Image 1 (tube, rainbow, N blue to C red):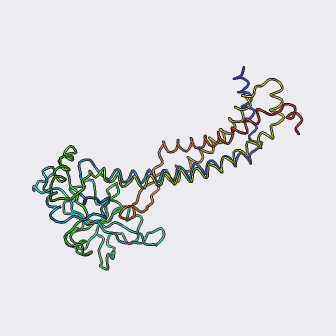
Image 2 (spheres, helix red, strand yellow):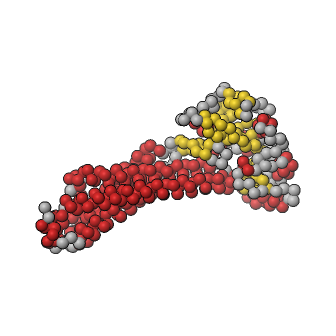
Image 3 (spheres, rainbow, N blue to C red):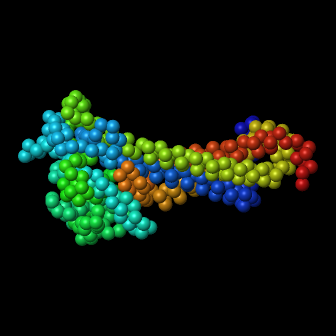
Length: 392
């Protein structure tokens, strides 16, 4: 009996929505805006995090100076690089040379295509075995740089977002002209970098024989702990050792947490406004159905049916708003590329609108609808039958 009554009242409530298109549209649009902004911000964090997380592997290790949290805060001398490269866990190529890259990381300012304003870009001076270290990196235009020359290859992200990064262009680094000879695609955070010969960039920036980091290819992923133990037990070395996967994961966490916090804060503020909109719309709906609700109560319909009918209407509008916001975010931002400041310069990444984030947005929409509808629903259920029947 209660189920039949409830279904009948819910149908009546939903059927009356077209009579209040204005107030209903306010609820739908308000919730859609909340969901769209929230999901877009979270998609930004997810895209940034994914870009950095897929950069490293378990069978490559990065060596930094002890206490350094990033490459820019690290300095390794030549002897440290030589000892670490010669560790037995480091993979060697066909010429019996250790596969590793002693690297010098500096930053340069390049104008962005979108704003024409300068932004920092990571310039990575790499070793001669860097292509063996990262075999997935491929040249998509032009060629590799030649050693001992002021030549650059730019990541596809840099080429997409910055001016003067075309093959054949000349970039000025520390007052010296450098020629762009190629564009590479790594499918990860390296796409946001410019690569060149490590010794040449060290000379240009007066860094001497020191480097900021050493990245090596291990014989396999299981060799990492042994490699780490060998380096940290050597009294000549003061280093920190991580797999590159661990390193880039750690680099992504701080930014991702910050973005999620910002997203939750902005979402909560906007959600508060949407809740007030839902409250206002629901009270308006109840005012228009006062006689109807009082009549239902007079002929024996229970309070719970009234509460459910009001909530059903609000939740339906919330679902429509959530679906609209999620659809707009997916259409506009999934795969959208942007750049933001990372540890060593701009990081180019793609927004990642996942099914989980879309469902998260729908959950926020339903929560807004529930909170915005519960108080008016309870008030409607407690309405005096006599007062309701007298209402105009």
